[in-house]
Length: 274
Image (cartoon, rainbow, N blue to C red; front, top):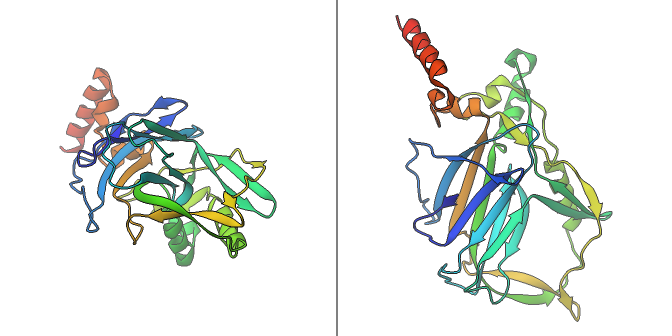
């Protein structure tokens, strides 16, 4: 489980097919806090093609509240998958949420999707123009990461409904962001970040839209304790295949070998260095 020593009482885990995945720490990463004083922790996990996964958030009853309540936002491959508020009167109670997908709303209703790791093909750079490679790099910069941001929140307020102006544009953009690329130029995914998977927002289905919370023509609006809406804690998971974890030196190649494989690996290293 990913925890923060500076923010006790919170933990985030990733489950694949219902089981907590093993987490790895970058031995060379010393970053724990950013300039905006947000506490951060980064873990690496193994991704497997076709595996469904979920993000599990847990607040311990002993967590020290500094505001009316807390909320957390989930981003998967830079796509927002949900914003979850702690219920009323949970200040001294355990609060847990399991997020295995997301949804977006448009004129046709609400479409839900599930999280699933998906592999992609890596093709030679010569197959693409320089402009296409740059486009691939931009797309690759958005994948490989699951992030949970936690916020201090004030009591929500009710404001006049605005008729949903601009909602369709935002949701059309959200739908476009869910389209995953199934091949990349080698230069876009090799190097410091050995990207091996993306998330396939598959298993989509139409569901009935839930009515907005309102009373007398009013809708509920969130109020952040921080006027700049900055999180106080972030949990980041970078997912790679086992080979990708080895390429980034997150784990040693010998960690996943039996004695005979370790011996063969060592002999090959010795031979190559002669």
